[in-house]
Amino acid sequence: MSTPTTESAPGTSGEPTPPRPSLALDGRTWREIAYLLANLPCTIVGFVYAVTLLALGGGLAVTVIGLPLLALALGGARLLGRFERGRARRLLGVRVDEPSRLPRGKGGGLSAVWQALRDPVGWRAMLFSLMRLPWGVLTFSLTLVGLFVLWPVLPFLVRLLADADRAMVRGLLSPSDELERRIAELESDRGVVVDTAAADLRRIERDLHDGAQARLVNLAMGLGLAKEKLAEGTADATVAAMVDEAHGEVKLALQELRDLARGIHPAVLTDRGLGAALSSLGGRCTVPVKTAVDLPERPAAAIEGIAYFTVSELLQNISKHSGARSASVDVWRTGDRLLLRVEDDGRGGARPAGGTGLSGLAERLDAVDGVFTLASPEGGPTVATAELPWRARPANEQP
Image (cartoon, rainbow, N blue to C red; front, side):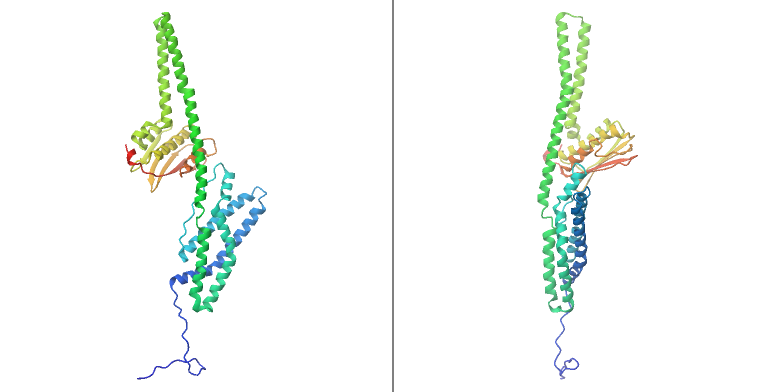
């Protein structure tokens, strides 16, 4: 049996050469290496962005463009944070939830700027970009040296650096402050709901005082005069005319009370659902309205009522302001959202701030996690879309 020979390095005395470290690294380690090497260019871009925009926004804060510029910078930082979360998700396996969208400012541009400046997600993303430059240089250098010099300990070094990156992403780019922001948003929305309810109560009180109540007072006075005429033995024709007038007042008062009750909650909505109620709304509009409701089941009564009054207000705007010849209402469900689309072929140019009630409508929808969008170019057509959260009708509310 022959004895196996051992190769010797050239110029040696025949001593065996130590085996080279294995080049076999698993896929996870190679992904971590790719992440650490990419840290340097990514952190340079983030650092330059953060320093430049913060310096410009802070330096110009005394002018009219400083704070809006800073608000835009925070919005851009949100996008950088989204990119970094995606990079960490693909290469490091870090599962960090995306933060919710920044809520729209209520009350115009200044409110939107103030809302953006208070955004904790944007500020934490900005901090992430600022503090990462030294770390990016360090991880790039150590990983590069490990690839060519420290090969035996490379997997341990890479794992240690990647774990530190995972902690940074989770600590600064996760939606940890979402609960506090959501509480503040709900408090603001609660104020909108309270104001809306108070306005509706004042409207009902005004309609009762100026409408049905006034007519009933006139009716009582008319019947009192008729009673006096009968006691005086006045001619029947005079009393008959007074009674006929009182009868007309009764009918008008009843009609106004029906209209008022319909404005609070229409009976057709309770009895027959959204399709019949919206068809009834379309029939009362001064513009011909085509209605299409495609719902497999009825939503919860609260959602159904909000949808009804949203369409009601939009159709009132069409009657008063659009100059349209036709309109359409479409209602359908997509996933966990109830969607409404109201379109008219009028003159267009509708704006939420134009005194048409659209601003208040958007606020009321936002208060229940709804969304309102409006597209109304000059010359038309006008398309209003509303989204509401879908909630199924409980069994005890089924008709």
